[in-house]
Image 1 (cartoon, rainbow, N blue to C red):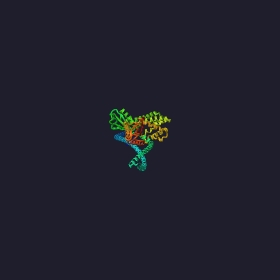
Image 2 (cartoon, rainbow, N blue to C red; image 1 turned 90 degrees about the vertical axis):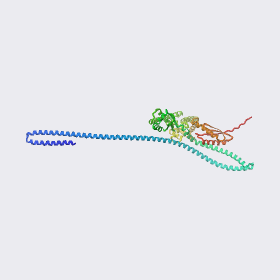
Image 3 (cartoon, rainbow, N blue to C red; image 1 turned 180 degrees about the horizontal axis):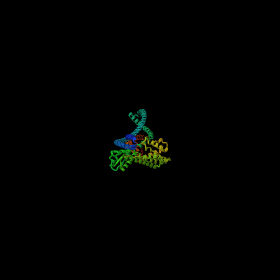
Image 4 (cartoon, rainbow, N blue to C red; image 1 turned 180 degrees about the vertical axis):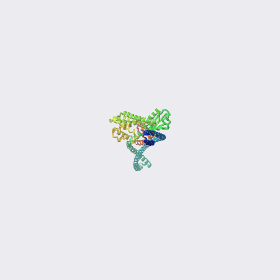
Length: 560
């Protein structure tokens, strides 16, 4: 109940009391006067009616006043609330704008840091690739040094034994020399100097023949042992590393419409080229070469993906980081399809069926692997054909031989990503994809026939050698090729007693013709060994070089 209502009730009560008092007095006065009673009642009724009317009016005015004041208070409160709401909204808007500005600054800082991180990551990747290359070369050199040290230790032991033997023989020869000296001096009447000369000539001839015989036997034993132990190591090293031609196959030239396109490829502040290199893992080289850019990477798959993506960007004309990412992803998908198609074509060409999809994909990856310029996938197809032909001639399973020949180098598809030789990796893949035991044996042991359990590693080894050694199979620059041939012939002709020398079979063999009067059969063995040692010391060449010394004597007479 409000104060206005209370006021109305109080006024009503006061008026009622006043009216009641008046009515009482009238009744008292007119009680005496009965005639005036009715008049008093009417007046009292009228007074009461007026009092009620006034009370209602007063109450209505009080209620209207209270309503008006309540409305004013509510309007004032609503106005104050609106002003406070506007102030809060303005404060919130200022806070939001400040937060957006701070977020923009933070995003810009993150973009800059991300770009810097990408640049640092790319530099680390390049440094890692260089370190991997250095480490691989150091490893090869270390292996070569270990092999040479082992050979030197063996030779040192043999030389120690020979030195002891020679000391013993020297003692015997000294005694014989003294005895011969006395005999010659007593019997032949020769002087001491003449006797010494005769004895020395005889002893030198005996020692030369003995040395040649011993060296020949030692060389035959050493060649047999070295051939057995070094075949797999040398073959693996040659096939996995082609240092002379690696630079020639690590760069792809991509033509561009004009030199103005180089600026668009680089992008504003280099953002396009950084995005391209980060997504493809390939170095994009932009130099003064007219209307061309270079893609550099030792990984041929990445280089091919980068080439496809760059050609797509050049054809489309829209070059920015988002578009580069989209095109690179598309190129990677197309590359997977292309790899699978190459693997299917190779299996179809080799007439090998039932190869699982995963193995087909690995076969396709070999299309981008080379050894001295020879494509490994084409080489595997040739080995498959040759293995099948040899197996058919020997009465073995031709289909199994073709399968072993096609998959014998399958480990080379991922040997740069895993530790181990390509034969170990390939044998593991064969077991994983459920290949027959004969195929796994050929993959694992085609470079180590002593561990072979079946005849199929022998077949694959022969086919592998034929495919790699055929003319034109492995690429080499003409200048290096001619230089190697000339160097072989110069080394051979530098030795005394050599009449002519010929480098044949693409530098894999050198034929040496000697003067028969100056070089006998025993000395020919020593000459071949010395020339081979000089070639190993002074030249660099793939595989091995066979040194053949030819000594020919002719007796000519005429019948008259």
